[in-house]
Length: 358
Image 1: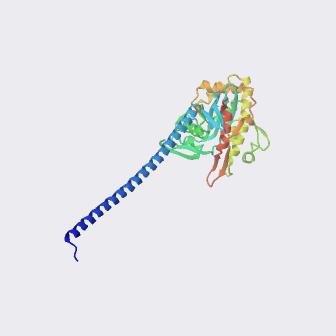
Image 2: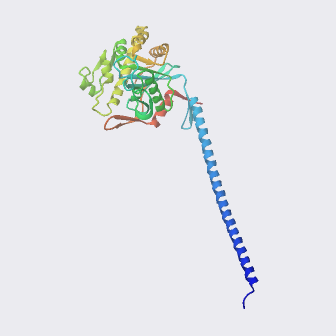
Image 3: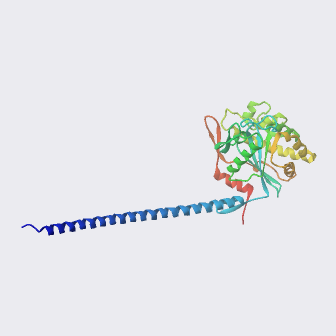
């Protein structure tokens, strides 16, 4: 029996409405899922953003704290706080391997290198001095320039080259000062003095010569004027030969020379004191004679007072007052390198230039 046409038509409309409602329900479900996914994504992004914001705030606080500490010259070490001792001045002394005066500026690369690098800790309250010898081959970040003096950036190189990349005068000293400050945990340098090695005989003979004992076999073998085991009174160019000689064919010969320089410095200090007791005008005369061989950011009266205070003090200046920057010597195919040991340097800097806060 055939169904009435009306019934067939009604069933078709009903099925069509069902399909529409099903589609709408499916669309609603999809939208709900998309909304939920978007909500979860936004929540996660917000959480990550909050974490990054908090990390940024913490970094800012740490940087501000470090900046504040640096401004106050404060160092935190092993649970203790150390404040820069304002009575102890840090003076950077550089011996430049340039066989002439330091009066003229030079093109980068031709102004000489810092062959001897010494940091003086001058205790103005107690009239005592300590010396930190920094090996010339110390590997540390220095400023690099082109031949026109344009700064190219920084790279880890031999410290001695920091002077060479400057102009042979103030700019060279500034590059050395910055490099040493970074090397020594941000230690602020109070003054610098660069002296041409050409002035060494002038200093040496002004105090009547310097007495040393020859203990370096390589020096004795290279120069008959320095017999091994003998005590020698250095005169004129002999002083330069004694201080500057090193066997470049042997690894780390610069470090061997550093030890020899300590003996000369001790001998010079003793000779200068003995001479100053008899000659009140010694310091003034020496300062005048070496003016053209020197570059400094200190006033003449300042470094003269510094010399007079040392010469007039009761300090028995010896080997115990001279330290070598701790580090590890490394030999390469081309050059010797000396890598500073940071963990050993900081205690020395604290002992020399800081005081513990109570």
